[in-house]
Amino acid sequence: MREMSGPWRRRCVLYCFELIEIVKNDSADPAFKHLLARIYNARVKLNALCESFQVDPKTIRRWGRGSKGAQTEA
View: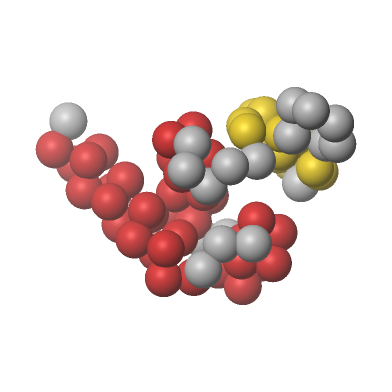
């Protein structure tokens, strides 16, 4: 994961040198929440997510569980 500087503060999520997604570096942005929920549900270590994205672990768990609930209803 890489943070871009400048007026367009974004997060670039990379996996094996492949660009996965770019989202605003804003925890209030729905795209940011969905990204973290998907990564959490993919069983990435919660501690690593908290360190990389500076978000509380309880919040990430809530977003992940909420995302799983929305997926099963669809």
